[in-house]
Amino acid sequence: MADGTAAARRFLDAAIGLVERVRDEEADSVTAAGKLVADTVVDGGRLFAFGAGHSSLAAQDLVYRAGGLALMNLLAVPGAVGVDVMPATLGSALERVDGLATAVLDSSPLRAGDLLIVISLSGRNALPVEMARHARELGVKVIGVTSVAYATATTSRHSSGTFLKDHCDLVLDSKIGVGDAELTHDAVPAPFAPASTVVTSALLQAVMATAAADLADRGVQPPLLRSGNVDGGLDWNDHVFREYGDRIFYLR
Image 1: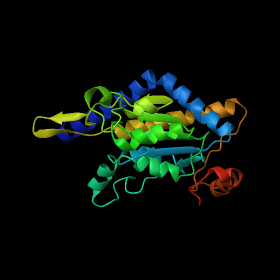
Image 2: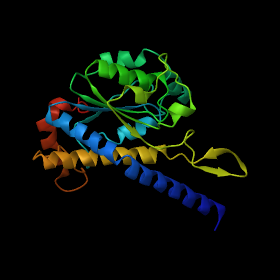
Image 3: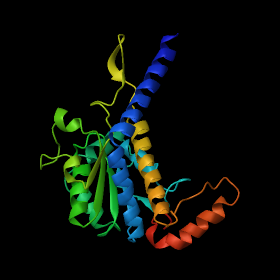
């Protein structure tokens, strides 16, 4: 087998192994997170997701997508969503700025009774730590998605010395190793092949699936979106948007 093919199999095996660990070790937390999402929907709250840099990919994966909850909104921090800011290193620098998360939350539509999912692989930077802490001060429930391993292998970059996991109502551990690189090679001086996006997205979609099933079990029709590329999908979505428009912010 060629080295490239072997590397591909090794990465896929590593990613599958991590997803299996999440399935087995985080099952109770996923169930609890799904219930918290469902509770928020039933109680009239709004749903938001935040992530900076590549962690934003998993947050965006929850918003306005076929098969997903229509009520999930992206909480965006200018310059910190994805790697579209130039230079890209500016986004990383913004994650370390104290006070930015508080300013964003205080000018956002979040209010007491809402739910915020905060995604940060390391959970050590000021932005996600402050985001979770201040959201809870506002009466918002917080689900943190992070690699708990970072809290023992690195130091916090927030003035409090704490990590994201310390300011959440519920923590989901992605099990990603410190450094987020699954492979090594004798001829390559740095580890490579990050798996955090794959695993975190799978973990969060498991939470959304749990929430949808939980709502159905309560006799509540989950406010799900359908693909706009199937017959009837756009009409279905328009109906959902009309019914829940006051809790959907990406349409405005």
